[in-house]
Length: 111
Length: 113
Image (cartoon, rainbow over all chains, first blue to last red; front, side):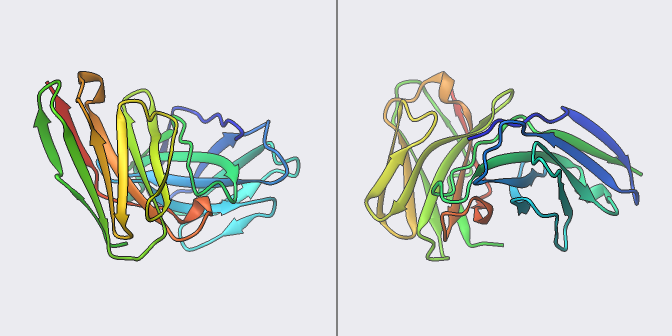
């Protein structure tokens, strides 16, 4: 599976958009980009995933560059409850669901 | 929230003793996973199961064994606990091979003295 690179930490003001970048320059054609987050002391939570098109759901938007070598997770109106570690994961759709987590980005949302 | 429970939630044990952690689900999901989480390493897959009695190794399986005799239960056993196995252990379940559909349990904090 392709490896990902994320900034170790980011800050965001409450109510503003949080844009979390992820580089995955070695991604292959059949690999998806997945985003999970982990709020302190809890298990990870699925946010969104995509292959090549931009995706949006009730939690976030995912923007994938045309060459698919990077992506951005957007939380449109961050709240204090969005403070968490965000993991960008790249993998095939049929890997028995095995997730390979990196270090992630610690997002801190400030009042 | 998906119906996943882990027991015990906290455990302190001594080096060399056997330890079994239990993951129980009420969702009837086919796939179950055990991860460990350590500072500086993130989450790492230990073992996973793709059906009753069907299991396979993950990234860090040495020193661990698993069993799945029923759909709802996935047991992780440390045959002889070591201090390096001090960690937080998460169980996860999914109903498909898609990596987006994993639901995680609340975790078990294990301290090996």
